[in-house]
Image (cartoon, rainbow, N blue to C red; front, side, top):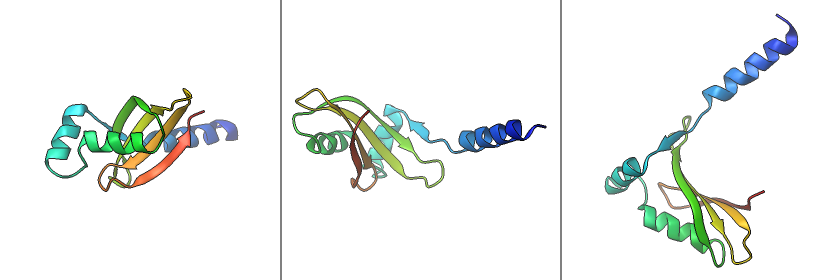
Length: 102
């Protein structure tokens, strides 16, 4: 095999192994009832509090395949119509990251 093809296959294989697991709304509700993650309303409120004048455009919960940590991610729009990404540890409620979405 040619070195470039081997390098591509290695990168592709490594990237496909590291994948987060999407959590459905029904699963999220069950996890919240069990106390594994914070309630969705609490996570959404916390995300909105990080950016002034926000509307949540999109949100989801994923479980990190390596660490098992649940993370809530929200795309929120501020009063100037800029889109922000807010990441919150869904188990502890700790803010992980707030950044302007490019």
